[in-house]
Structure formats: C-alpha cells, structure tokens
Amino acid sequence: MSATLEIKNLNVSIGDKQIIKDLNLTVPKGEVHAIMGPNGTGKSTLAKALAGHPDYQITSGDALMDGESLLDLEVDERSRAGLFLAFQYPMEIPGVSIANFIRAAKKARLPKGEDLNAPAFYKELYAMMDMLKIDRKFTARSINDGFSGGEKKRCEILQLAMLNPKYAILDETDSGLDIDALKVVSEGVNTLRGDHMGALIITHYQRLLDYIIPDAVHVMYDGRIVKSGDKDLALELEAKGYDWVKELASDAA
Ligand code: ADP
Ligand code: MG
Image 1 (cartoon, rainbow, N blue to C red):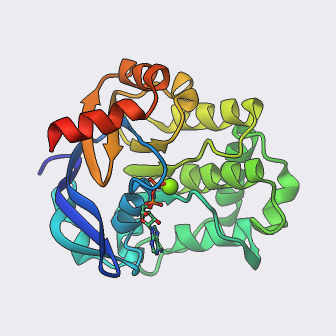
Image 2: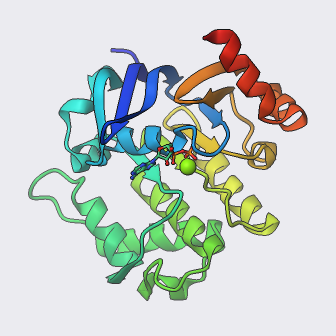
C-alpha cells in the first residue's frame, strides 16, 4: 500500500458544468505540495470534491488516500480516515464552542467504547492554542462567530493540529491574514508537517510559500495541472503573472 494522496484522471462537475478536467496529482505522505492558479480555475472545487462536498460530482477518475479510494467513503469517514480540509471561507457555527466541536471530532475518532480523557484533551488544546497564539478565552466562543478573518484561519489550523490528519488540504488559508498571523499559521503548519502529515496548500499568492517551503509546486489552470516544479516555480509565477500560465495551457492543449 503506497502512502500517498493520489488523484487519478479526476473529473469533477458542478451541475452540468465540468470544472476539473482529467486532473492527476500525487502527494507522497509527509510532503507539502502547493497548488497555485488564477481565480476560478477550480482549486476550491478540487478541495471540496476530495472532502466529499455533495454539490461537487466526481464524474470519473479516482482519489486514493494511502491506497484506499476516498470515493467509497462518506464525508465523516474521509475525515476519520485522516483527510482534513481547511476551508477558504470557514463556516460560522453559532452555539457550538470551539472546545466542544474539537472534542466531539476527536471522540468520533476513538474506538467504540473508549472515552476522551478530559484533562489530557484540555492540556493538548491549550498547548496548541499557545503555539498558534490563540487566546484561551476562545475555547468557549462559538466557532467563527464574529471572528476576524485571521482568527478564523488560526482556528482552522487549531482544528488541524488537534485532529492530527495524514493529509491536510489548506484552501487559501493565507487570504485575510496580516503578516503576523501569516507567520503564526505558517509556524503551526511547519511544526505539524513531517513524516506523519503531508499537505496540499492551495494559494493564489506566492507569499505563504516564503514561510511554508513546499516540496513541489503545481500550477493549475482551467481545471488542469499545467505545470509542476520545485519551490522556485512559485517565484517564477509571481514574477511572470498568470498570463504566462494561459500560454502554458494553450501549449499543452
Ligand atoms: P478557484 O478556487 O480556483 O478560485 P473555484 O473552484 O472556486 O475556483 O471555481 C471554479 C469554477 O467553478 C468557477 O467558474 C466557479 O464559478 C464555479 N463554481 C464554484 N463553486 C460553484 C458552485 N457551488 N456552484 C456553481 N458554480 C461554482
Ligand atoms: Mg478558491
């Protein structure tokens, strides 16, 4: 069984509109790969399709996590199997506190009959909050309810840290972050990355990749990966802009 997130000839439609077109991508476990591309190219669609969002129909192809097809799994099963998606636009969940939400998610991952040790849970939660410079007052606040953009993103990384996934997909986690919050979030991801966790970092801008150095960079355009390279590709893209990508795409077609 190969320890990879492997996307094979994936086609995804929303309604009758095809968004993702025969996309291939492999992220070996423990590696951090970035996907960059212009707005509207299908980056979030890819992330949501992998997470199992019901509006995004996978019409053909497959996505395998450590050899197991995600397509056979329900949304919660994908999560429990070790896939984590941090949303571009995190949802507000009034009435559900951060602590209770994360606790419920962790409980759902335990073998039947086992219970979460509350003191150990809070010890871990507070340690992660300290790492991410999130005030402890936040534990009692409703998820994302009235949070600033930066607070929402840090809260997403807190969930990531606590759930300890095998593969994390971060969809434009950098958007809405000022430079200090960007550094905090990047430090968090850099602390978590390693043999246990690989990540797919989706970003429109190169800036985040100054702090989270990726093992590979993929350029997406019109539902396809049109070029892959090392971290320098992100700099090249920043310098040349996205018009260059359109030319690449027409060369590839
Ligand atoms: P990106 O994240 O690269 O900016 P998206 O995946 O959000 O791109 O969008 C890709 C295309 O899919 C766009 O044309 C967008 O309008 C369309 N799209 C995304 N989500 C929906 C949706 N829920 N309903 C209809 N069209 C959508
Ligand atoms: Mg997007």
